[in-house]
Image 1 (cartoon, rainbow, N blue to C red):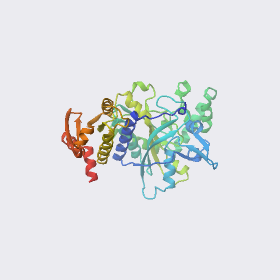
Image 2 (cartoon, rainbow, N blue to C red; image 1 turned 135 degrees about the vertical axis):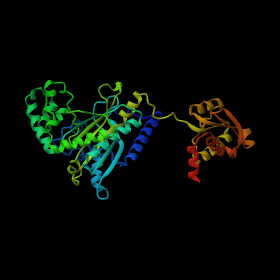
Image 3 (cartoon, rainbow, N blue to C red; image 1 turned 180 degrees about the vertical axis):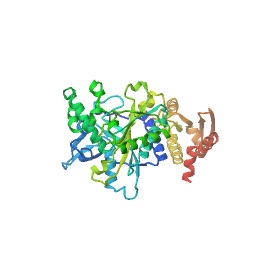
Image 4 (cartoon, helix red, strand yellow; image 1 turned 90 degrees about the vertical axis):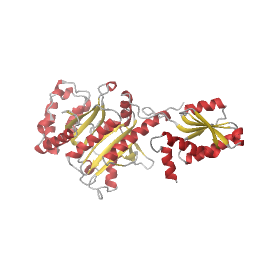
Length: 438
C-alpha cells in the first residue's frame, strides 16, 4: 500500500470545515487591523533562507528541504513565511506606493524535524508582517492582533512572554559578556552551543539541552546591557500593551529561534494543561535588517507566526468546536429512471439559486435513500416517483418541522426559499444568493 510520507497528514472531509473556519477567523481579524493578504511560492531560491554562514538557527542548519531542480538551480521548500514575504516585498517594490505595508499569509511550510503531535514536517502557518515602520507601537499592534486571533477562537487565557534584544550596539555589548561567561563552561556545553559560542552567543539562551545547568541560570541578562534608546523603546512597547490591557511576562532568556531578530521578541501562550510545558501557540519579533540582508532598501519590519495545527489542537483541547456538522438544503429521493432524470434537473435549478442539493446516484431503494438524506442532514426531503411525475407534483418534507406537502414540480425552489425566509429572523444565505443572481 502506498502511504503518505512521514511527517505529513491528510485533512479529511469531516475535518476541513474546522480549517475553513480557522481561516475565516484569521481573515476577519486581519481585516480589523487592515492587514492585506499576500501569497508567495511554496519554494524559493536557496539563498532566500540560507543567507548567512553564521546563521545558527536549527531551521536553517538542520531542517530545510533543499534540492536542485532540472536546471541545477538550488531550491528550498519554504520553512517559514517571513523571508518569502520579504523577497516579494523587494522584488515587487511594494515600498514605492506604501510607506508601511501590513501583510498576512497562510499556507504550507516544510521542515525536516522529528514529527510530534501538532508539529509535522509539512505544516500550515499563518503569519503577519508589518514592513516600513520602526515604531514600537506597531510591535504592540502585532502582538494585539495575535491575541485577538486566539481569543476569537474562544481561547480566553492568553499570556504574552516578551523580551528585547536591543539594537546593534546593545547586542554587541551583551555578546562580549556572554562569550566571557559561557567560555568558562565551554566543555559543559552541548555541541550546538559550542558552535553558537563562536557564531552567535545569544542563541545559547534558546538551548533546550543546557537550560537547567547552573551556569546557564547565572548567565548575564541583556536588560543590564541595553543602551538608553533600546530601554526607552522597550518601555514604550510595554506601555502600549498595558494600555490595551494585554497581560505579559518579561522573559530574559527569550531570544527566538531565528537569527534576524532585533529589539522586541515575544511568544503567545494559552493555558491548556494538555499542552504540558509547550503552551506556546504563536511567536514573533522585530527584524530591522532582514530586508537589507536580502538586497532590498533599508526597511524595518516586525512580524509573528502561528502554527495552524497548534491553533486547532488548542481549540480541541479547550473543548471549542469551530464549525458545525455539514448539512444540505434538500435531498431528492427518486424512484425509477424518469424520476432520477427529473431530480437531477430540479437539483440543478436549486443549485443555481444557491441551495445545496444531493440525490441518489447508486439506484438504492427508498429506505437507503432516506438514510442518505439523514446522513447529509438534509433540511428538506423531496420524494419523486412515476405517479408524481404523471401529475407534475412532488412530495416534500420539512425535516425541521416534520411538515409534509405535495406541491407542483415547478414550485420546489420557491417553496424552499419561502420556507427558509419565513423561519429565519433575517434574510437567509440562500435568499441572499437569489437576490445577487437577479
